[in-house]
Amino acid sequence: MIIKPRVETEELIVLRYLNNRLKLSANELSYYLNLEKGFIGEISFDEWMKGVNQNWLILNDLLLENNNSIFQIDSLLFGLNKLLIFEIKNYEGDFYLEGERWYSSTNLEIKNPLHQLRKSESLLRSLLQKNGINLPIESYLIFVNPEFHLYNAIQNSPIIFPPQINRFMKKLNENTIPTTNKQINIAQKISSLHLNYSPFSRIPPYQYTDLQKGVFCKTCSSLTSQHNRNLLICQKCGEKETITSGILRTVAEFKTLFPTKQLETNIIHEWCKVIKSKKSIRRVLKENFTMVGHSGASHFL
Ligand SMILES: [Zn+2]
Image 1: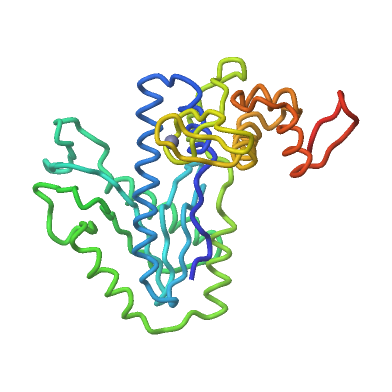
Image 2 (image 1 turned 180 degrees about the vertical axis):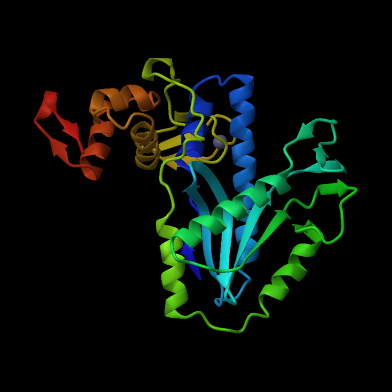
């Protein structure tokens, strides 16, 4: 049973919008693409989790604080009177171990993910104890990408490799003890400790004037153009979308990127760029938002 679902972070959403509308630096782009890749990995983990029975309570994407340290738990399972925490990695390609050191196929040393996992486990244990929750914790590092391989891996480490995931999930399904209300309360208590603001967020500064205007294709993120009165068409993949839907998606981007700016017909007309008629913009705003003020001075909530 999912107690806390996984949602895309504000950081990922903003970076995705900015990537269409701004030239990100090489570092920013690589950071953004890693976030996308990580999220895809988490989604594939969630797909496996759909096969796990309801006797497990699931909390995703927990951001917690203890002893002035902020730490993240990709997924936490609660059942059989214990907590399982998962660090999910979507690494691809050949990696190797030299003692405690981890290297990618290009011989670049990467952070040892087991250190991160152990640190999270210890911070979580102490945080929960402070909140009167004393439960054993098992932690796992799970690699979800079938194209991942780790040379020199040690047996009996808390690592789950792609070919082992099915067997691991089968084992979880041996849990036949239904959850109790007491357990649900504990899971909700843990969920309530989640922080909504991430200090790790790395969104570059941006300004309205610097961003490319237009409606971007919902399938391939290329610029669309107006096909006829009612339809937009993607210049790259040919995907068609109604003008109303295109405007609404683009307004949502505007509101996410500029939460304090007012929604006005003129600015949305400029922001969407490819919609020729200002009247269409005004109609869509009127139908979907509440108009405040009159004609020339109106805006929408
Ligand atoms: Zn497209």
